[in-house]
Length: 465
Ligand code: PXG
Image 1 (cartoon, helix red, strand yellow):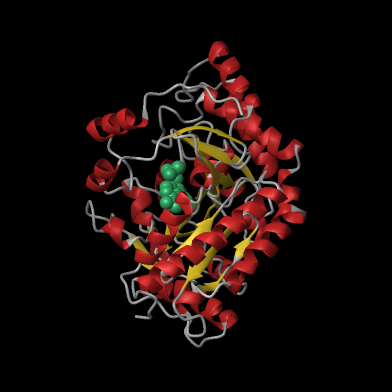
Image 2 (image 1 turned 180 degrees about the vertical axis):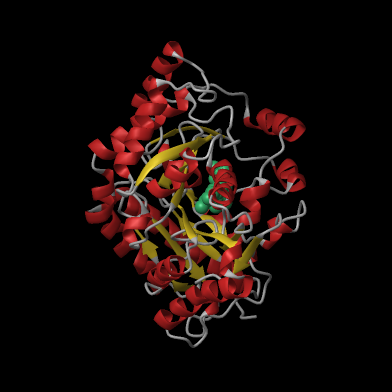
């Protein structure tokens, strides 16, 4: 790997970071005392820190680097586009070639009934667009009261006021006066944690019907849309029972509710199809995209909308909404090159037929570990539930997340990035990971589980709560 020594000594970077940089989702006092881990370069599925450690990136950065790190073609695309047209906007009757090509390509890859894209700089902004868009859609058809959006507890839809309101994370709602009005949350389809003695299929149907109950409670005339991730990502890679999505689809159709599939994580090959809508046979009216759209090489996201939605939008004057960077030319050119690589290198088929099944088999073997309750996986996103007692799916006596955090720290020391969500560990490696790298990932995960278990036993913490 060609690594340039382009940085100050680690301690100096950490001191500057502590002095001037506020981090997302981080305890500021803790990071400043301990010093941030400094990542200096990356190639393929490996990231490298300022101390020269080579770490396997089991999270594709933050669920985004689908084609792997460090591809020259994307750097070349950005370079060429910056020289040609570094910036121009898409407001007020203008457009430019890269955004047009990108929109055309996305329409080609999306389900047949979805042919228009409204661009944003990331997933949160795109979901803010969706809130305004679905309300405008119904208002334009004479139904201004049809504006409530139903989402789910433990969903993640971003960090803006709108995105975090759509999300169902109580810790986020607790800060900043959220959720904003007319967004409500129903229970999630998380069988392992909440299914009790119920059969998973029955539980899936029951949780889907929570949507129908909520629509009945509010009145159909007040509900604009339902939003959900096909697989909850930040919520812990929760793969719903297979009865869930068909029932959700029926309910949205029966009650004339728009269905927004938030594909920010699941899009662009992660589940073994271009979109998880295909994997779960969902027919969305809107899909949120970001992350894998550019594999994280440039900030870009958007909302793909179905033909009947775009027709209403286009027939009703100005949509008074947009971002300076909606369809940014450099981000568009980078995304287009990323999609070329995903398509021409057959990465989606690779996930479906080759590396996905291999990862599933190897990841599934972690379920044999004495501390693992389940190890579900779909394509290139998987999770493991940590438990002190497999048979009863028990939680630990310690506060939720304490064990998961310990395991994450041990993973990092063992040169593996695996994220924790409470006491669940999650992975979403780049789609280009090789079989040898999958073996390494699973080997390091197993070692980290062993070390976590030993530490818990030594500290008397391997007990159910
Ligand atoms: N929707 C979904 C489903 C996401 O996963 C967003 C929207 C927001 O996208 P932006 O680009 O605005 O971040 C996301 C983002 C985590 C984590 O800790 C997950 C995300 C972002 C940050 C952290 O798992 N997902």
